[in-house]
Length: 266
Image (cartoon, rainbow, N blue to C red; front, side, top):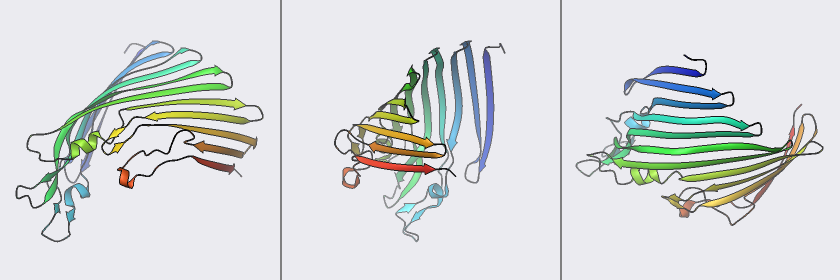
């Protein structure tokens, strides 16, 4: 191809005892319009093959069963498409932006038998996930670097015709935050010392309901001599304790904490 274009093609075949051979192709095209700028796109197919738990689990171990495995469970499939830009507009600034879209099929569900006496695993869910990831850094001073990141995630899942699962869609859509951002300051101090501050935000989770939160962490480090490093870290320094996952009844609240570390390499 032309000197500033690059095409990469790949394929992998994986075999498992439950679904046979899975074909996993991928393609990536990159264009470098200038020395410090890169545009790229990619497409790939990936799968999650069934495990023994998906196919062969029975609860209880003897009939009559409440959970009777998933004898017909197939591989979950994702077709993923990505577009991205990575560049260095100025010597002090670096930027990376990636947009992605994924089509999912045959996602894992828990179905109720026609007799209503037991449940079994199936592939009754499908949907799309799309989003945006942005990262950047700025060298404000020779000893001071700023970094920032942002992630946006949109999910749309639905049951396929014939599925009677009542929880998998809400569980899957509610387990990942739709927005996250991070800001980090890294400062090099005299006498081989450093000081870092990180602020991060995570949006709420709908199911189970977990409120959004902002957390701030700080770290001071010192290297008195080669091979020896000392650091003190404070976590969740601002705001009240917050949860990050699981239902309120079993949720652990993360509160302020301080940690000291001594690293000595012989």
